[in-house]
Image (cartoon, rainbow, N blue to C red; front, side, top):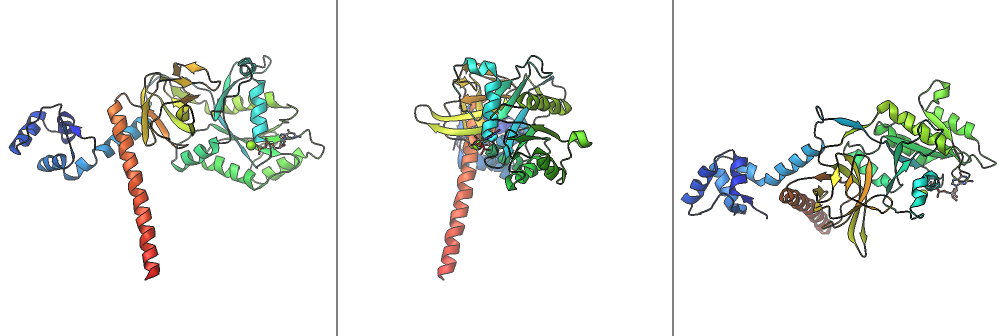
Length: 380
Ligand code: GDP
Ligand code: MG
């Protein structure tokens, strides 16, 4: 265990440090305010101040603070418009990857980076078509692995995406995973844009797709409904500008905002173990600004931002809301969907990470002992 300083414990117990020291002295323990206390002694002295269960949950308390920090009420803080975050979903082989690739390559700026495609699970596209009403704006796309984060976030009631683009192949029509994607989006209360893909194919039947989805409650806007349908071909690069415009249009309805000037909070899009670089995580900064040197807690690990990179692999020193970044130097691997939170107090971050790890181990232990008990029962 990490222990807690006399000063912090006194604060937690809501007593004067002096009284706490006096009480310890009675037990023959001589300490100063900055000294750290551990385990039994903490429990013991806390009990004396009538705070029995409280002590065990010092770290739980910290975690609650972390969660509060994440969900922090932003009333009164200055909010700015942020770029919409879009997740592309749909049935396998309907063209999600092709569409994302095609959109990405419309962005002239990304071509300038020498065509190096950095796979960090999310990327920012600048709408570069001058005659488009969305010109000059940015859209963040989550790659398909983002699904995992999306699902986990949803389970916790948190939100990572502003819009879901459901891709449906015009030659194949609505399939099981199409409906799954729609269910996902609806459960998360996220607006849906339907991209009817592969319209270049001779057997494409976009009208049928529209009909199929209208029957499932996705009425096209040009028929009095509120769902936008865009016909595209990822392969022939048809309709991509229109899709981007539609995304911006739909985003303008909810007008996503964020606070620029607060400690960064975000979500892990993906995490991997890199041979040369160790644990690497892609984070979507959702609120606040992430800066070099920031200490953070993420899932059950913690760290300090020693270097970070944008979606093109460029080293950056800060990242505002709706910015995907890659961070290095994590102690261990977080999971996709884990929340990321900057904490000025590194020890606090460490404490929470350790507490979460411990809880996870306990849960695993409980599970495995249950399994072995069941095994035993079967043998008897
Ligand atoms: P995903 O599984 O949804 O990511 O689908 P992919 O992007 O991997 O595409 C599946 C297949 O469909 C690939 O062979 C693509 O080349 C093809 N494909 C994707 N988009 C189009 C399109 O607009 N037109 C045509 N003709 N083929 C496409
Ligand atoms: Mg794919």
